[in-house]
Length: 520
Image (cartoon, rainbow, N blue to C red):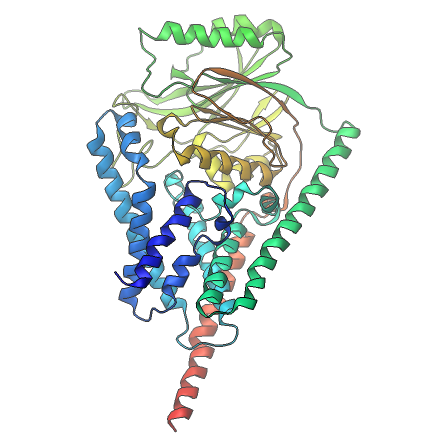
């Protein structure tokens, strides 16, 4: 294995740290070692080989959680998990190999003065299009596919810029800074390192200004009492997925939920937020459990957002994954159905479906409405579980009038992995982008409130049942990215196509003329 392959092997370390949400300065230059290892390539086959090598190593390091997760998820043992892991590893290696080939294709053979800037811009634009594909077209695999921007969501100040550009600007920055850093090191242009340093400092300063201006606006709204906060309770049982609701356990779990609701009575709570499928049977209007629940809280004017499934085709076990809004006196005033089911897990992909919930499972029928759930304290925009990873779903419900966001989920299948933390920071991006307070309740994962500023003062992760209290401030803000959700992706597409045409026509002709003149 030559020197470049050792460098590429080491490149898997910052990529892995980024995927696993380790907050280090390397998150700004995740791909620097990768680009460094590609600087000397001039053959497509070698480019593909090196890309596949990086992808394969990275996949092995990061898909290990699937082995245990698949066993818990399906009850089929670790062999199924090993098989799924191998499939994803091969897919990821092929994907990275294709990216490697494209990196070579985009490079000019002849060096020139501003090569670092030109290559940096259109490689970054291309990478934005790759991440755009992930969140617009491959969104059913949201929890498996890595997007380059997610690790930078840990930086509160940088994330503020997404209210204008959406998260794809973070992808652009990661790739551009990675390429520039690699280029300057490879060609020993040490003084030019001021460029990535300056971009990082400038981005942080811009984000700090945006945050400060928004916080000033919030204070003004509070002073004139434009927005009225209310108290909500997060009910988290934090159950292991293998702990089933059945005749042996059902009474205990029901009593626990009733007791948690008794505890919130008299606390001034206006709204309770339950996690995804907290009640593991399908809704019926005469459900005895809901009647008892209502009898406990009706006198305290508490409204519930409850996770329950809804029949679509009971014979074939096809259900809606739903959230019900229930006011006092057992009055159901709204139902939200999950809009984005997970491919392979909740809906078939190419005819394949992994058995769900230890082979007792079902298929999810996707809902079609972006409308938020009306509650007495404002319109609740719903993002069920993996839906928080897709920006458009949040933008659409805010466009329909959501005053705050709610993200119920179930991270029990991978609670001890980086997936739970990624889930939390995807939700943080949605809160910042839309400027909406977002309450997250993930069974066996992170639960708490993410303020519209992106601050997370009361985020918890526990394996025990817990009640969390948060103050939510609904608002009617409409950010630029909500009104224009795809503008940055379109801009990068335009830049990418323009550079391709320029390089393939004008630059190519210029290079050929220079070669002919030297021969003459």
